[in-house]
Image (cartoon, rainbow, N blue to C red; front, side, top):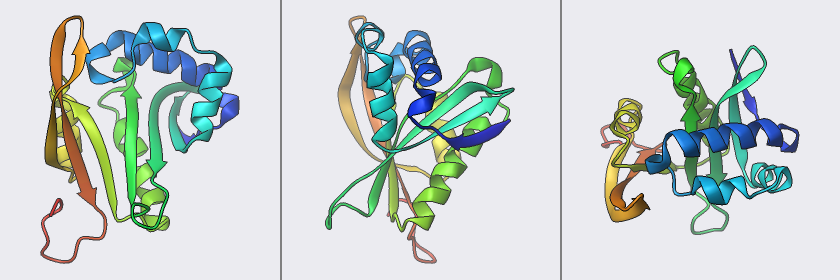
Length: 172
């Protein structure tokens, strides 16, 4: 198993895994499967060019993804976001999600990011617990952020401070 950055050449595999994620866990993502299915490999390649994105590979096959997007600008450039995190069910519990997160944390630290942020659906308690185990704290809630098949789901806004001073709380 290995982790590496994804590029436009990974668009076909990324598209397939992203569509799988949207189909298998529609309540966990803001994008709709039908809308995403209408996009081309070029659309997915363009998305991969928008940030520093990581893939988890097993036997050469893409089995996990994490999209990383750093904000741009003097006032907001200290922030980066994690998005679209997904690991195939057969590879959960193997440490791949932690490895993906570790790759993003390494990039964030080496590029001077002060805080990593993400949104996680209230319908994904295992994901919330995963991020909490890695030091993320909830800093807000967006009520009814997602509507899936007529049901509403809140999104939890979570943050990890990378510049915390000794004695500071991770989210404070």
